[in-house]
Length: 455
RNA sequence: GACCCGUUCGUCUAGCGGUUAGGACACCGCCCUUUCACGGCGGCGACACGGGUUCAAGUCCCGUACGGGUCGCCA
Image (cartoon, rainbow, N blue to C red; front, side, top):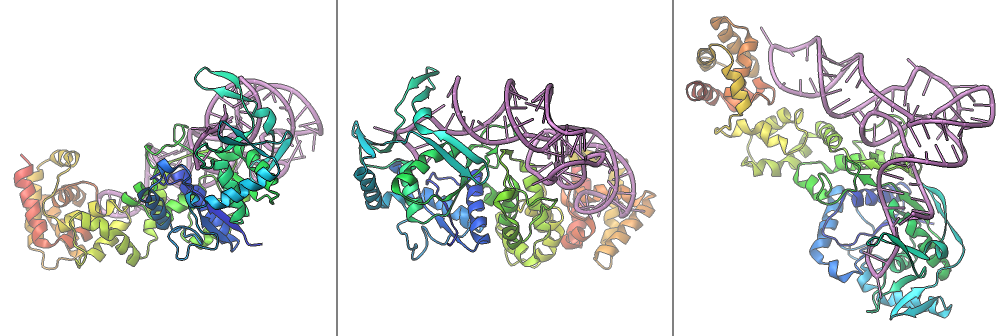
């Protein structure tokens, strides 16, 4: 039997990191087993659905590289079309009829309820192990959040609203049966729902899929991640210059481990090969944005220059650096060792392209503290101006000469030179950077800085 | 409140009854670099607690504490 997994988001308008990770685990599992990954839109709640909010999810999945074999956006969508729950009502009606035929549903104020069996139901979860629940018992009381008391409740679950629309548990199970899903991999928040789903499977006489409930991702303070939290939304990663492969790498390791020390997966194929539900934890994890950035930097360092160029171009353009500029390739080589995200790239290479520098205050203050700095810089400018060959090693010689003539160590000149020429004490390797900026501009900047910025 | 899941450095984790409890991020220090980084080396730092079982327990069992989840005509 072919392995079939699915990701079933509601079109909320956001692709949350937690949802993305759920999608990733389903995708990895399907790819590992040569199976199919199905995307299904759970839009039974009409009020929350719109095409634009779906686009956010689809584009986020595409950006991550999580391609689906059946689902929206495909032509044709697949053999179980449609993949929007709002379009599948006839299917739900026929399944409802099966329940009616067996007297398993009844009317309750125009809503329909499914008779829950009075027996222990065992969820055989691939990650959490066996979980046994009696729905009749646990459902007979309910916690009222407002009064903070237990109240009597009807354990039978509502599967259809008075307006005829179906409820999540029902459609979820029906679709998973119809779409021949073999492995239901989803957040642990669904674990308590699963006995209900199993009761429904049994009522339909359907075979159970395998269940795997993955732990939740929490904020750094242990609270539940919501869309307003730092790093919570996939499109923030897109905008902030993250590489999809780095985000995938980080997400994969947040709740799963291949065992051993391996962390960096530059190749998605390696990740697919190593991925295993057995390595998924049963405890929640906290999201560490810092480590995610570090991982992104690792991936940037390993990027082939061509692709680094491609993924950086939009960030360079935003900073007013034109695509065809011949200085870009050399600039990128300078930037790659320093960039944690692609947003850092224009910051690092900016001084090569722009003459108007925003002098960093702390850097200027530091330079001001160097004794006789103005005279040093003017002497440096003179030596650089006389340089016959504007290459990195020659530039170094000029700086050395300037240091000799002013009787300081070369190290003393480096910082003022850097700040004068680039605006900041932090930046790329200075000599090649100066080479790329060009002799006239470097000299002019140093003189200008000495006259205008230093009092 | 009931039910369910969980608990190894601050964080992500390795560990599958016998380990000086390993790695990574972050942090600190040193080296490399007459610059910024990268890199290298080192430091700090954890088995929630209490009972069992066992010659031996982070590893198995039971409690307690703590964290999370669920208890909808949301998904």
